[in-house]
Image (cartoon, rainbow, N blue to C red; front, side, top):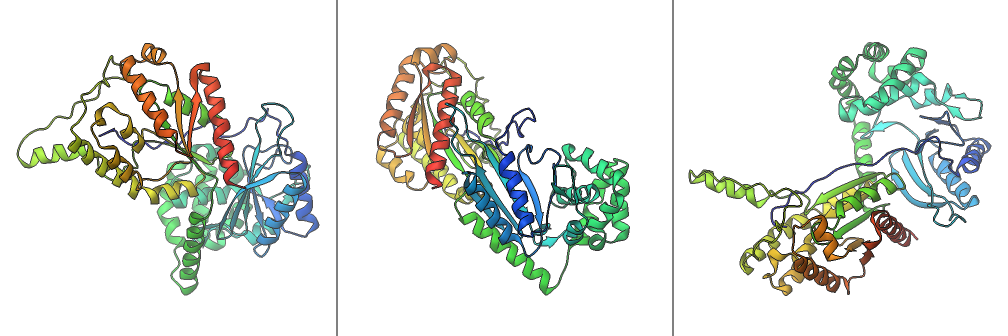
Length: 472
């Protein structure tokens, strides 16, 4: 684990399939009826066509500026009536997300369903309003299922602004909807942003969207950002309030789980993680992260070797690791105690500094997997000479996972698939891992002898059980 790189990815299948029947129709219909009954001004911002029976993932609802608290309370009341649980909540400036989980199914093995309800009392970017939401609600329309919707042009303009401001480009999966909205409802497009960016810039954006000229639209991003910059006491107050609400959210409990995978090389950790991500991405986690060894706060030590060689005029070549599965490639000679202790100090410092990065990931409702973590020092062959007391001391610095998972497989089977370690070394590492997890409340052992699908099922179940136990 000395110089292994950290890798961060976002992955997963994304949205639900329209062919899947979700038990959400009665809940959503009741929610919309309750909002009307309590005289809340509301409209669905995107993907309203399948409602109330179906939505791709979440429901974005625009409500009157002074009606956020009322709308959030109604969501909670309707959820309780239908026995859906509020699993978590995001509370930011003019925005709340309530993650709802369906009641336990009577069908054995049936997984719960998740429905995020996103409420917006204004549309802002870092405290700056980017759309005339009052006009958007005033011109809302109702489709045949009784669902209030913003005008298609309003939807197109706000989608474009929402993506151009932070990213400088419009996502590919948003382009068709933006083009359609700009074509069919140019007045709604102007209504959304004309009073904020000005008529000239609004027309440039509208022309680019109608022509599907995405390079031209992207080129306007700098001009759009300048149009949203305001320098006034009220602008400063909005920025401060935005930062304060964000800080509170980062410090509040989140729908997040950190899982450390522990097993000898070749045990199938990556395959299992990929399968679990497929199951749980957006059910309920909003994103997933897969990291290797550390948070990449500090540079890898091998880069210092190259730099030191340059300083003395010597070329240092870092050997590439052998391809995965290379016979006995993991059977390196143990490092000296002093060298191992140096690795421990350096990389545990990276993990310690990564606490802030981890907090941000958790606030984004991530499912976080670590393949190789600090705990590998306890069982890896290369660090056998490191004193145990030293490892336990620096263990106090590193973030504790919600779950540390050992995939228990037959050593002969692992060797047959990937002979990176000898059978004897695999068995030795497995025994050390079992002993390490004995007194860890977050440790869990999964019997991985029943096959990949069974292992994915069990790990997914344990992750959800842990999340639910912490959300009560």
